[in-house]
Image (cartoon, rainbow, N blue to C red; front, side, top):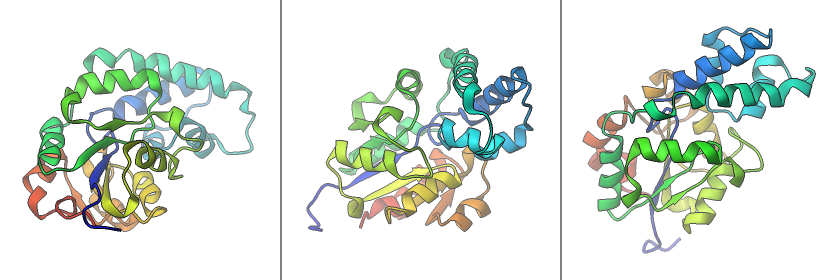
Length: 225
């Protein structure tokens, strides 16, 4: 890969740049409770980062009756939608994106959020001026830990896997990046521990966007391969 080819940073959004992990957790908890299929919140939290199809398999088992899946997803979406106007960015998330852009890196939001959720996430971030490309779940045939959303982000941004770093907050993010041999920087602000992220293969782990920003010059982002 020529060293003068474009370099960039792919960012997960939910739990990485915007503080939504626990909102998704409680929304899934209530949707499942309403369907008389209660699951402990701690169990749900550890599945956040998967797409809804794989999340329900993970929580309820792949051999279950799937006839209620659409109703469960719709209930989650309705409950989560009540928070849209109150979504908050994680500490200095927009500053981190701008700092990456100032380094000449393409900033790509590789989110598997549904298209109708992406607008709320963008409003919370308020950094459209430096975002090069944004994906949504519509761009991926399979959800994380499959790497489809990262493949789509690369294709849409014109970047090569050999010249990017991915930043995410879950072990599913690390797994998806690993399947493409993309280094993944982990953030613990989504509620996954430093040890879990490192154990899954994250090349570096920081508390949140603010800590990564402070360490940016010495982080894996500073020198994409």
